[in-house]
Length: 125
Image: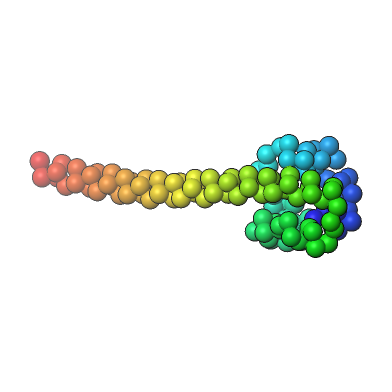
């Protein structure tokens, strides 16, 4: 996408707050990214994060069909697969946290009920 927009690596790096070397590692698939960095990349391209994952090989070949792009697409697809796995893990974690929060609220209510019952029993004595 960067090359289709005509941006240099340095320009793209500046748009997402990275060094040129740091950004080059992303393009080569040599680094794992956090969701926040993915969001910055999508923001730089002025697209939604989900659309970044939908950017595929056919889009590249329809615009530029050279050996450099073949390598770029291969690295990009690996990166996208890793990012999708990370998003699935984050969603699972979010669901687990949500479930645990509900359990905590239930336990708080149980404690409150037990305290109330304890006070009633104390008054009967």
